Image 1 (tube, rainbow, N blue to C red):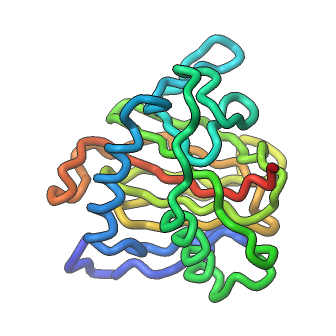
Image 2 (image 1 turned 90 degrees about the vertical axis):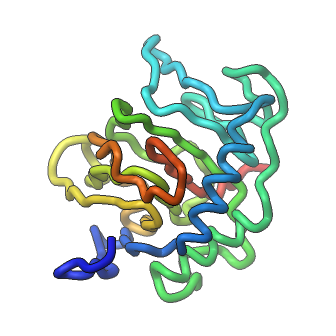
Length: 220
């Protein structure tokens, strides 16, 4: 948002967790939205995730590189149409390393040598979608999680590693924002309790919110 009284700046949400506002340029955002539209198409396209308890996640999801299902990874859409997952594009993997460098200043210590981001989980939120407090704990790698926001703004809740309840910090994420969390914050609970409908930049042509989460699987 331009012309703000107090421009948004990079901030540490918690030790190891960093928020970088407006990290993606408008052109990068448009390119990612167009790419997400293609990735969402069948086969192995956007789906509604069923939880082990029989409920349904309100945010719909598609994966690249690896298919996530509660609670593991597969090379096929095992809880969808059963087809092979779409490959992880090299340019998206490179974006993951660039995001870590932007958040921490460099990748030394955060990533193990040439460790590559090989998972992209793309969640689509409409106005009524939410994401409960959870941890990204199904990977064998401890590399930082990279989170990119597109479209509608949301309330992002970042908690602690012990419990889904307080203490936590609430921040607003807008289109183009980056969040990276690793180190002591790698297994922190986090969620999205609210989406602010109608706040997406008009030039994106997107109704709703897209979140692209990049991870290193550590899997063979």
